[in-house]
Length: 116
Image (cartoon, rainbow, N blue to C red; front, side):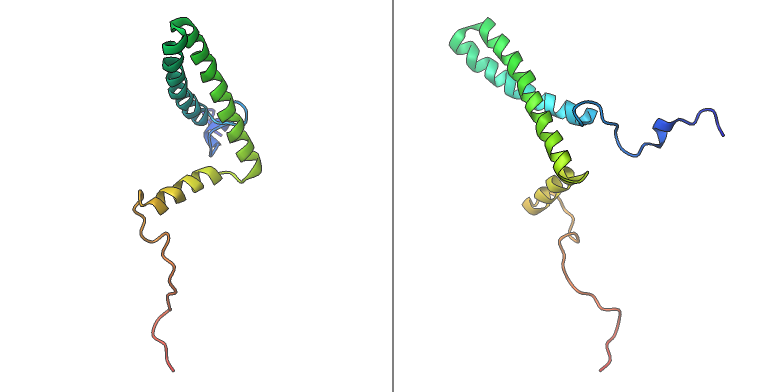
């Protein structure tokens, strides 16, 4: 047995990092939350001033990230692995954003010439 073999190299999917979410899911939810937090920051900065807007904007980034991770955790415990990716793919496919012509094709094919 080679001494360079590692158990982590044999893992087929990303390891669970925090709140039953992978690092990619945490990053996506943090980026999504940052966009929402910046919008809240700009809105509150106009109303209350820079400092209050900045503090509440940062708090909203953390809060929205936590809510998104809870939602992902709940979906993962409720449905099977890969459900969300499959749902997003089927939504893109039905909206015409993906060009997979044979996925939704429902025809019956025979094995050859029929006699009789």
